[in-house]
Image (cartoon, rainbow, N blue to C red; front, side, top):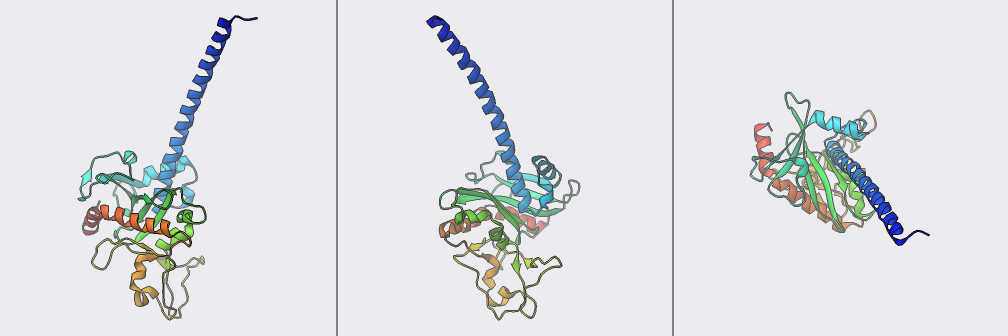
Length: 271
């Protein structure tokens, strides 16, 4: 029989070995998790800016596309440039240093093709994180994507589904006979919703309880004649009123933080 000292020594050595292996595995998994989270955020930004899905199939392709076509920086609520590392800014809590991302045609002449900003706020059960992208006019919506939330699947969780996010960018227009116009591929030819009113003030997008209302007697671009407010409205989510109200609220709040800077971009045409 082995002595107690031998047994204790053996247990000690095994514990050290297993602890070291566990620590190494944990660190390795964390590195992988961090890489995947970074890729997920970058993919969300790129999707909001209407990049083709074929460019976003792997972490490597996402990173390369981001590197080639995205310029990022921070601004403050007064519209001035602010020093920061965009990836380190807490987009839920920070109200002084605001990350912003520009889709450019290349890194030489910096022609802006889209502007993405982070959005985050409370739904029913969780904080919802995402990005909204604007066209260079800083008014019409280029895209919106949500990438992290804890809302109920089939209810509030629908915020991340295409049918909901498409409402922000593709309101259908009709021909003179009231028929929805489609392109040569059969896709609906729509126009994006707008975040500014007629005075140029940012008012956000109203996520309604129910559907946006239009007149069946309308002709082309129906909402301009029958419901002018529809350009600032999207259909809500059935059974998820609280989540929809949350999106409505934090979307307005986050867009307003960037209003001074977006006004500068609109007025000067540069970043």
